[in-house]
Length: 110
Ligand SMILES: [Zn+2]
Image 1 (cartoon, rainbow, N blue to C red):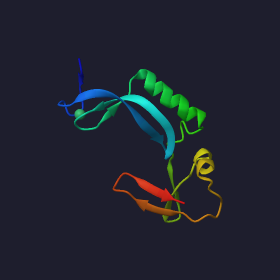
Image 2: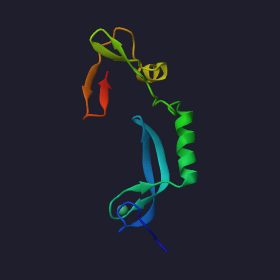
Image 3: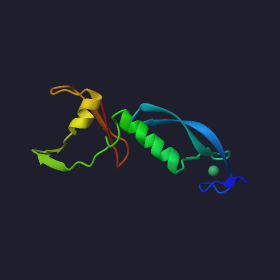
Image 4: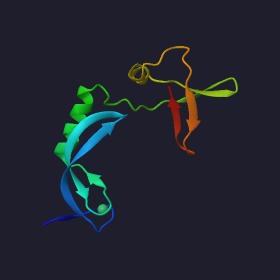
């Protein structure tokens, strides 16, 4: 019996190997359930654990962090956590390009 896709409700889920990336780092291929109609993929508990373990091995698990906005003169300041600075190889004095991606997301590029 094929499982129905919980996203579109029309497709069936088939077992497939899917490339997983986290923060732009390739984690490898993992067995997942993929909808043959909308293409949405779903991971079961074992696969989710394997992906987390691989991310931990690569030292990128937990790189996403909460930060607070503080005021400095007329600008607002957000601190870049050390882990993210290390991951990106950022240094003091380096120029970055910052821009909004819509109303709820900011991108910062080195
Ligand atoms: Zn679907």
